[in-house]
Length: 321
Ligand code: C5P
Image: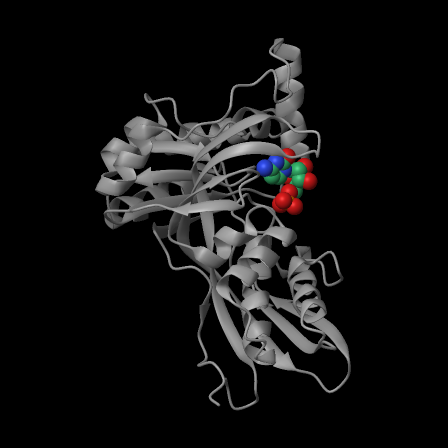
């Protein structure tokens, strides 16, 4: 805890190295085989004690203007939910120092929810177990449990049922950030629409159960970027939402082509997009690739980041008794 009684938590972004999407379920979600990898782009969430009852939120960072400050902000919902479960009247000022692209398919909103949850938990000293925190995360959103966990994991169900995965080395990425965001529900709806028009149907009875790719999991465990690139391209693993994101934002095809031309080992849309992710062979190659992507004029900016990264982490020491 800092001098002023505040608590700060650092939370990573993610890329889905595989996002296999099953059919539309009756509850509106899709079953997934979702291979999450946390990457070293971070938001920092600070929870500070407030004099008056209620939850307020402020945001700084290049995309701060696009972040809602009301209850639609998942960080506010996280604080509310934790307080309600523990019979606490919330009095907290949340601050989000935002570096993860907003609505970019990198789980920035989920990261802020996991960060706010961990920060408020430390601030209010609730004594919640890890299981309870993960349970609250799942209630907040499909990607939120992974933001708490970090590292690498296979997500089943709607993405919230996590099995940690071994990663045998560091992978270097470049993220090409697009102008504006894409709505995750809209991209899932477009995926269903494309399936309908292609004649396969879109429901869970039409689409085979999504399965993780064995070569992809082996490549992660071996820490082998060339093998991961093979699994992403020739191996058929990849992102089932990519066609839908490209359909809604056709210019992403130019970004993917620019990354491939500039020497990326593989390129894919990150989650529901519109951020695109490119795998590089080394940190140096990632820097060169980022420069080429910035010069290509096909993205707003390009950021380098390494994976795996740790999950939500307290930066200020927890309260001492
Ligand atoms: O769980 P979350 O709130 O992040 O999901 C946002 C939306 O994304 C859902 O309402 C649904 O439309 C879509 N979604 C889905 N299947 C999943 C995860 C999300 O259809 N597994």
